Image 1 (tube, helix red, strand yellow):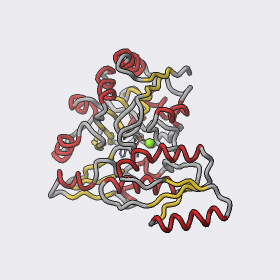
Image 2 (tube, rainbow, N blue to C red):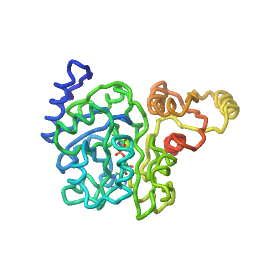
Image 3 (tube, protein in one colour):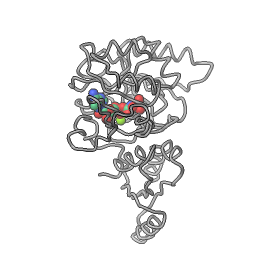
Image 4 (cartoon, rainbow, N blue to C red):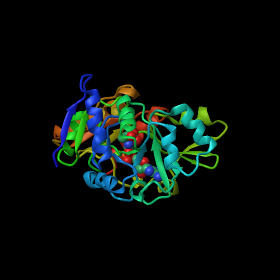
Length: 316
Ligand code: TXA
Ligand code: MG
């Protein structure tokens, strides 16, 4: 397959939008920017198109994808019911990095929902993403644009692994947030975080109070989000998380004594660390290090999402 690579500029914005929308309408695949990570998009209502996403990524077919919309009207086309808690969360956090799980309706093909009776929906805030969904006129199914098991794509050069597998790749620079959206499931009067992200537990609590917000860390809840059972974001090198700068230095010295090539994930503020995580993991891998050392972060606010991804990257 020929892949059309476009560097998005002010001058070619409209033309790129038209080309990408045309591809999406005719069952093709487009890599496009969002504020979290790049997405690998296809028409969510076309089973054939969605199946192509799974092929291109090498993604297990029981791992459902997120459907991206540009308006509340599009939500009506996808879901069977919307609860008052859903309404509250949408009013506060959409458009933005929050994905909500709904009971799906018949228009959602089972390839999109991974055979579940629910569908994950997000309204992205990135202006090109919003314009693209509007122009295509259909909801867009889009998992993170990476081969399954490698870190999500947050910089245009990461898309090279998808050349030949998709119709178009739109380069719009580095992703602003750098971690995938928060995935939330509303269960009666409880809000469950299936995947932490830039919309933090604290932010959710503030909006749904007196309702309770919980991380779905229990086994049974983890199975509610099929993606969490697969290996994720794994760099080729072994990633180790240390509790302090001092411990990290000690470990580094010990590894170097064993002639291991060590890469360090620099500790910065939470926003910077999140934004740069996948890019640095890929860079260090490319540099051929044996072990990557990272210092842990406090698990509050965005720290919960960052630690979640670090842990997943270190589990192999
Ligand atoms: O920020 C993001 O969310 C990015 C951008 C492109 O929007 N997308 C993304 O998609 O990260 P993906 O497919 O890599 O992650 C989707 C996650 C998976 O863990 C999946 O299992 C979960 O959402 N998910 C999707 N549909 C679900 C459903 N119906 N019930 C529970 N979990 C679901
Ligand atoms: Mg992903």
